[in-house]
Every structure is written in C-alpha cells, then in structure tokens.
Image (tube, rainbow, N blue to C red; front, side):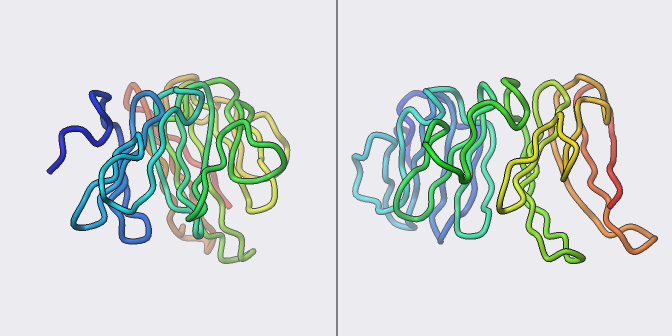
Length: 193
C-alpha cells in the first residue's frame, strides 16, 4: 500500500505494464509498483518501475494502454506521451512516434484509448477518443487525425460533440469489425470495417 505514489495528486488510471502496476493521474504524474516496492512519481522509493512527473505539460493523465512494447498515456489538452521501456517520449518530442501534441483529437482532452488489431490488414491501431466526441488513431506509422480522410477517424458525428468514455472493437456478422464508442448522455456509435 502507498499513499504517496503520486504525492497528493489524484490517481485517475492504472494498467499493468511489463509486470509493473502503473498508476497515473493529475499533474502528469506516473508511479509504479514492482510487486514489492513503489517507485514514486518523483523518482524516490526503491521500486524499479516507470515513473514521471509533469508529463503532458503537467496536464492530467486520463487513460493508459499498452501498444506493442510501449506504455502510452493520454490526457489533458489532447496530449499523448509514451514509455518505451527505458525512456519517456513526451507530447512535444521531435520526430515521429507514439507522442502527439494536440492534433489527433485537436486540443480536446483525451478520455479513452483502445488498441485494436485489424487482422485483415495485420495492422495494430491505437484508437484515441476525446472529450468532444472526436476520434483519431495511430496505425503504427502515422497519426490519423479526427478530421482526416484515411484510417480510423471521426469528427464528432458518431455520438455528437460529447465526451467519449470508452472504445471497444468486435467481429461483426459480415466478417468485418465494428469499433464501438460510448459516451456522455448514454450515446453509442459505431464504425464498420
């Protein structure tokens, strides 16, 4: 048990990554538990898992997923960062990769993420949902923005301009896939592939 893993900041999400329990939340803080000890957001503690202080420009981290060998965090201001097992790539890292500075769902808060393997194309997608109903994705090579024309995207027409709270995918009756988003005001929407 720990009462200081993120200091006094709220814990908003958790995930198991490489056998570490990772928690994240307010102020862009991340801490972890290695099964015996905690590693606090500020690097103190004797645990050996990932930690960070001030990711996403200090915005809160709302959700986390595992994409391949990366721990991906999303949150306030439409920002995304990732941990590759040895270092963090924050939202404002240069180059291309699993980080994003407010383009995939604009500056809307990221409120849901889901990893989906499109077996028909052998592509693993990281699907991103936002606080104003926008949907974007990463296809392993490029970001597919909410207002795009290629890939998994939607500009707030699936459930309207309300917060996306969860995303999932399943095989549909015609042999394809359905991506389902659910959000505020009891709304559901889907994309067929």
